[in-house]
Length: 469
Image (cartoon, rainbow, N blue to C red):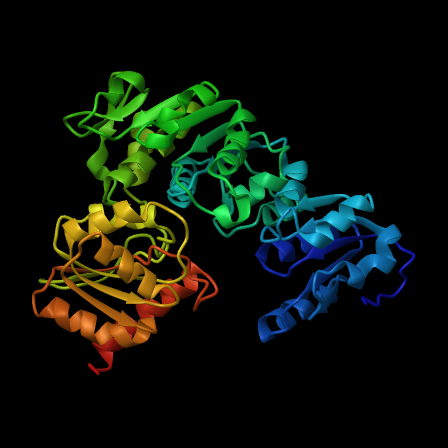
């Protein structure tokens, strides 16, 4: 049972001391609210954050689970509960709090309620949303607009609400919004909404594809201006269920440009309604999916008022985020790519198809639902050797064998042990590229895809600098 001082005072209860919880607590504190934070873990990182927050008067309790019995005696003193995005709306404690009449919101709701007078771009989708968010923020920032990227990209909205409260001003907020965040923050209504792609994901939480679709669509319905990806088969086939908007296409082989406002023409130009804006090859990220990302960001930038030259010039200085098809080693004969952000089959398919060269692929982790048959077919067509590791390695092997894959498959328990063998095969000429594109979530062995990608990069670095083992 949670034991706090002066329990007669009203307080805001923040669940979780991750990035969103930390900044939600700091923002509320800056508004002179009493804040209590609960965190179920008790490691050194959280102990450090606890000390930081307690210095400014925020009460933090570690090693406390989010269970109704821990807080039931304080119900009448709770003004609001700010939930971590990972907590499901059907959580037993959530339901009991609802029954008790307690207001429950997410960090995103809190940020929106204090920044809604600023223009927002809300970016959602199964894949591509982080790149589009980061790219659009870069384009606007390079054109003297204060337009930070925020949300699911790793920079909590409440961080900017906190800075805004301290008199830092913004022209735009470019927010990546996951289905988890949209689900709880139904009131978010951006000036511009962008929907990148849609494939099965997070169904362990959302249960059905229809429910997942409706949650994503909720954001677009609430947006004043809507931008969609016509190359995504699901979005294209469900156009009648979508509110009217702008469509883009990077598919040169189809007649999709007749149905779209932005496309890539046969000369490689980005085109807006028949007018050439700039050559697409100025954007250095490889793959058709990245041309789609470019078109989505360009379309939004044009809606905001930038001209083609302004967008083109900003692309010259764009540097991609790590773990997204990131080239981490290159010599005359071989290349190694870190694509740890590929947490599902469709994302890996896009990465594999971005390469013309023969590939060795490393995949593994915790399987999500998705188009595994297409994934297996793509690997059969493009990959010479497959390395699998982690919790669902055997299941991934069976998927490949069932599809008829007859080349070499190697299974390792951990990522670390496969590195020497994979690089040796690469240097023997089995392929030109070693692609680390896990196709699965990281949660079997890593806390997130960033840790997984950084670990992979460290293994590669050690291999080439400390000798070969």
